[in-house]
Length: 291
Image 1 (tube, helix red, strand yellow):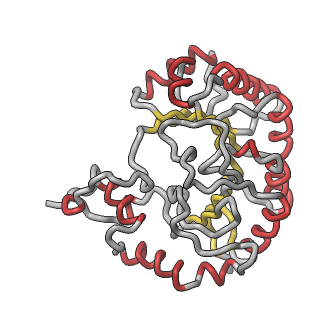
Image 2 (cartoon, one colour):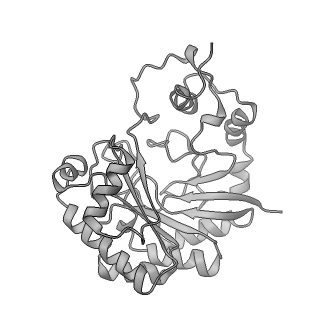
């Protein structure tokens, strides 16, 4: 019987923006695009062992810079019958032509990452003067949903310290009626394991797998070079188990290194100073404080 997982296949880690809170601009971040033929090879490998509950196609970059994206989505929906396929985008490349081709490919959900609600703040954060263009593209996608593609889900995400009610009010002023927007996600700027140098007093927290934002026991992560990774928060590819173009998925998944990492979550016992340990410590600061 095949194991059921959510799969995050990061098919493009290039990005045209330089958001100040994001590690993508760092030269240590892996930059690659997955070719359609390689995507098929990896997925054929994976699907021998895995039943996919949902498929994310983006994590660390701008997915619309991969011109094979529509073929990848169509393959996922039509051939592999994945029930839910989605991606996040900054929206710059989602013009009218691309909006139609993506919706025709069968995408279930698109999330716009818009990290400000006005042009001036947007340019400070994204380091690009693309706010008006992105809002125009979002409005067109909303119109398409309302007229032809009623089942597609549209989300907005924003990294800000503003209250959610203020964010919703600002987007309502920009977009008008928000009925076609399924939700607006407001994320606070927070620590990520690539941010070395942050001192964490681990004596004050319990390092607990329940603090994990992305459980490796429930999710498979694949890098943009088609290698089997462990987590989308591993920005600099510190944990890499090998190429899925060259190795059988189950051989890597059941290999000693992957089993060792996975067992730490089963045992709830993490190697001190490791990527997971540091991340869980920080995420746990406000959740589980020891007496």
